[in-house]
Length: 266
Image (cartoon, rainbow, N blue to C red; front, top):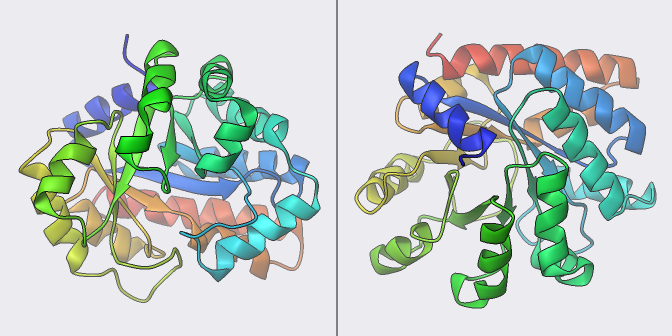
């Protein structure tokens, strides 16, 4: 049986457009207000939601998301809060996944973690710091719970490696547009299109591009060649910059609406 995430990409491909995937760390700006941000994503028209598992050593994340993760950890955010946020998103009818480093999965229990993702309505897990060679236990657990294992590839990934990694992915392939950490940028690297072209030669899976998209025009540009556009830092920055949580929620909704137009080529 397919996951809601897989069904989403069938639908958006049929509509000849890219999917908009929005990211927020669980527990940010507070454990409860995170749920309001998730609803703001839904109200703004995002197609899928990525819930971040706050971690003390986020090697892939830039300063904006690191700041949000610190706030979330200071709020006492734990695995149960991540799962609660995931359920809020999935209950809202939006395909949802968790992005987490390997350590929290190992600490929680690999098989149990996969089962909890599934029981909270999640479609899968994005894991940026574990190799496919180290993933046998996780892949077995994901398969047993019928969730999608999603790996990250970068412009530096060799063609041989690209074929190996993408063969273990399900749901979509996460294409990092640049070498480096997350963060909103004034432009999206031209290496993103090249990477997507290389992935298409070895996989038929949907490809979502992340790292750097922050505006409607950027989303429109990436949507011309990718199946999904992932936006994280721009949403987090909108929350951080807002004087109040109410204004932060409004800013997130407005940005989501703009980006949703962008992925539709408008």
